[in-house]
Amino acid sequence: MPLLVLKHPPLKQSAASRLEAASRNSPALKYGECNSDGVRALQNALLLLADPRISISDGATGNYLNQTVAAVKAFQTQNGLISDGIAGQRTITLLDALLAKRAQRSLQTLDRALGRLRHQYGNDAARAKILQQMEQAVQGLRSGNDLGLALALPVIAIIVVFFFMLMWLSLPQSQAALRELMRRTIEAVNERGEVAQEKLQELKKEIDRFLAQATEIKTDCMEETLLRDPKKHADCLRRFKLKLAAAHQALIRTLNDTITVIFDSLGRGRLRFPNAVLLRNLATAFKGYMDAVNDLLSCMECPEIPFPQFPSNPDFPF
Image 1 (cartoon, rainbow, N blue to C red):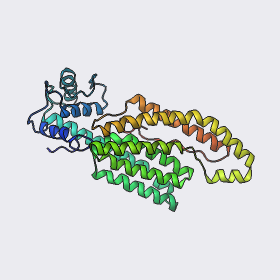
Image 2: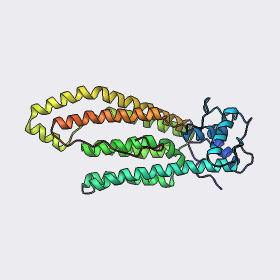
Image 3: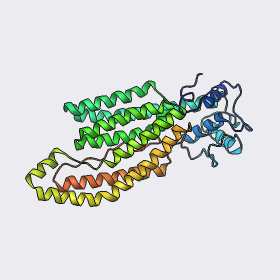
Image 4: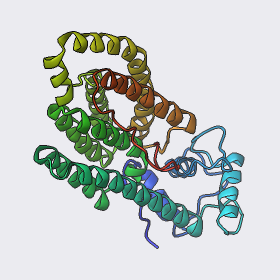
């Protein structure tokens, strides 16, 4: 069976070719193969499953030694395969299929999140247009790179979450900037090698710049408060800036940590996924930021923003 995922960028061509050969048992990956891009890709793919029962404590070394044999055996046992520690046709194709299935579940989750926005803002022409463009970008992932999607999904999720927030905060220029970040993230995960690294590094800088501007909050209700009671408006903003400082720094720090892990993985042709602690920290920091924003809105007697609720599963960070 042809590989669906483990033949795409961000894998190096040598890694993809070696996995393709292993999927035909010509030859399989097994104990003793060293300094191999194919072995390194296998190790990272197993780690990408984020299964605590599958462990390679030395990480992706490219050397098929005892830890890798044990990890492959654990994967085989859990999936009803012969537990021989050899990554051949059945093991490689099953691992490939599981990664593809997870990527598709993730895409469905994104569809649901955007669907809720579409239902809510379908009658707002300006917002609906931007939302439609973002949906088209997500739609493009269906025929794109499932492996890149599996790796970059937390970044795409971050973009969707911020887009959700900014749809409420009525900043068209920021919404457009987020939509462009989505497009460029999708473009970058389909690149390979040095080209991908250059694009991802520039994209990371743009995300950093965007986050630095994410404190600009302006809604129609806030404008009404400014006209009705300028003193109250100024007092609420002053209190907001004090509360926001720590929350914003924590959010930027955890976002940068998460983005760095994923972008470094993509740019270097490695499969690496943020661990559960990092994703929990990210969700906590985002909630702190949202709490500060909602305190501001409450102070001005404006409707608060509901915290986005996304399914809690290994495929999606929120």
